[in-house]
Length: 294
Image 1 (cartoon, rainbow, N blue to C red):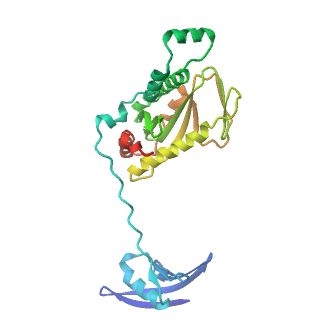
Image 2 (image 1 turned 180 degrees about the vertical axis):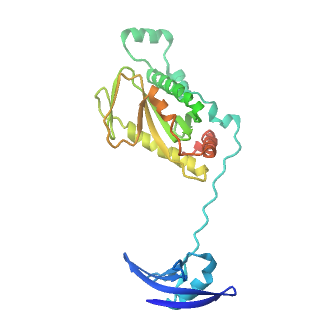
Image 3 (image 1 turned 180 degrees about the horizontal axis):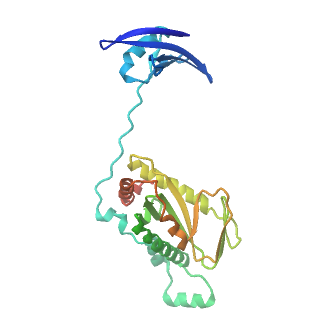
């Protein structure tokens, strides 16, 4: 069906040609200007009208209603909810002061055996309370020192971000190349094998490191996007400390994997965030209250 109709709008005559278009399961009536540009269209199945050129809204509505009685204009999308605001940052809420391993330090202090007990256990080759916490803290400090080197390349770094349920985010790296949630694993003098979705230490059973790193990155993304008015993609990173061998055989790995000294490979990445976006994300990420419901 093709029909031409002249409509008077705001003192001027607008000539619109109504053309029926049926393809890919759609059935529409288009109201086109003389040059062929579509000013609007009506869905013949639902009776809804969508105006494409606001300057010709009245003419489009009138002509399409003539050819398709009972149509209604598509509702205007609701305005998005305003971006929530964090309260002014106070020294107590500023996570920028956290050093690597801050949360683990308290665990080490609470669970460590005495100096003599640790010395005897070392001689006997036995573990003591607090050893695993101490290893984790050492690993976070070593990786944290490597990440700090990236500051001179325009990156922002945060360490030991507290999350609900007494866990923390080891490190968060924010810069021109994007946002990276960094998870540290300290396996001294051990071999690590990394597949697409499994990590094995000393040929042991699969560990869920990759899956947990991805979940952590999504958790971080939700927090940052809640307080930023733009999309904030977050990439997960696994950094292994003290290993004798790191073998990555994955073909579709969605987590970046490095030894501690290799995180410098992130330094030259650019083109993802502007300088203003980096500062906005950093302002949110350093605020303790942003993470209370993470």
